[in-house]
Length: 403
Image (tube, rainbow, N blue to C red; front, side):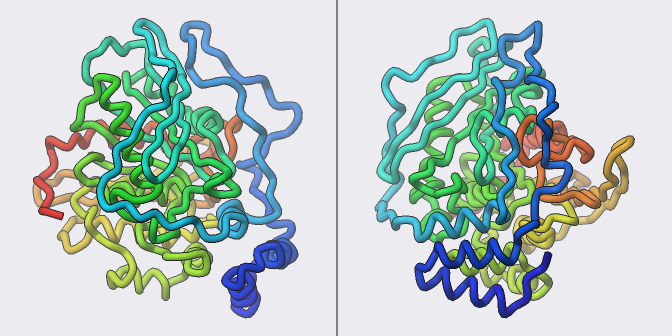
């Protein structure tokens, strides 16, 4: 069901006035029946979680069932969270890992819990250590979940741990807390969470550095990816910390700086050409991350985050660069068709990839239905992201300009 401009303006006025309960009820009335599609649902006859006979952890535990909210998750999350607190941090804050956190032993895969804190607050996280890790430098992938999700749920749905076991990568899953956002969305839309050394970017970067200090991580192969609000947070990391991350992956997310508050976030999530054109003109999207390789996945039938937001991520990553386009078409046997665009530099090297999944909604493509917001009929986003990441170590990237 589509809302008209008058309805959206009313919802925005209620939100800005702080009347969040009324705004939520109003949008529930408008959007009732706008449920997650078939790809995001499971029934009561689902099979129990798979456990590998040969590994202690191929994918962690059982995940919660797919939520069925009356409102799209990100919209509901912003309405419930209100205005996040402002952080005034003069410089990159020191952080600390919680004492007593478990450290992995060699020889077998582990999925461990820990937490990290700095002047911006504290966040728990989970960390996957593959069985092949023996203390030699390995890649690190930071995975940022979407609204209402958890590290365990996200690990199951994306199957990232399974691929990380195969490729001997360490994976860390920072967790958003209900205190920071009522629906556990990363606050990508707030200006205080879009900058280096402040707010949530400083916490996620701090977790990344903490893992790098405790395990043997190749500093040229550190990556970040996320879904929806997590994808938008990954875009922020690429913008704020191009010296830390070698490449980023954005699935069903938004460009850094696409919004500055709840009303602008609502607008850009439902954006059409007008908002995208403002982004392309550079009015609201910083392009500091133009030198970072980026891979984008977005369903062209996404009703929660408009597909043109994927275009904006790519536009921001291109910046003023002159890149050739190589457009390819394919399909998953028995599944969805897709268009894959490769953006290549003067040497013919792919620096950006954009996957448009035809008929795909707001869900992780190729994911496991035991996790929430997954679409197993789409191309395998996890496999392709890991492939893209490992093809783009920082050592192969031209030096970044001073920031």
